[in-house]
Length: 70
Image (cartoon, rainbow, N blue to C red; front, side, top):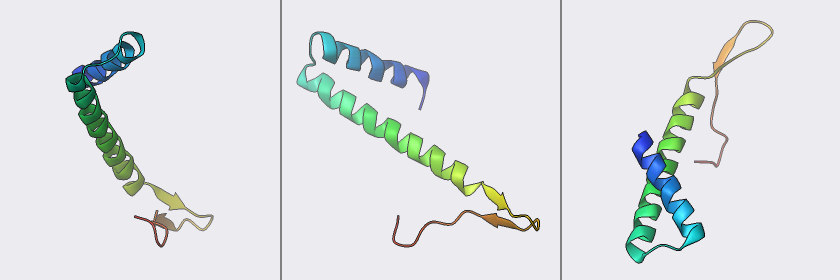
C-alpha cells in the first residue's frame, strides 16, 4: 500500500472525528481500510512463511499453521 493511500485514510479519519463524513467518503474510507488490512495480512503471512526455528540440536523447522485455523 502506498503512502498516498495511507495519508488519505488518516485524513478521512481526522475529518470523521471533527466534522463527519459524507456517504461517499465513508464508502471510500471503508474500501481503503479493507485494502490496508489485506496488505497488512499478506505482508504478515509472507514474513511468517520465511521464519525458521532452530532447536538446540541445530535442526531447522519452518513454522506451521495450527490445526483448525485458516
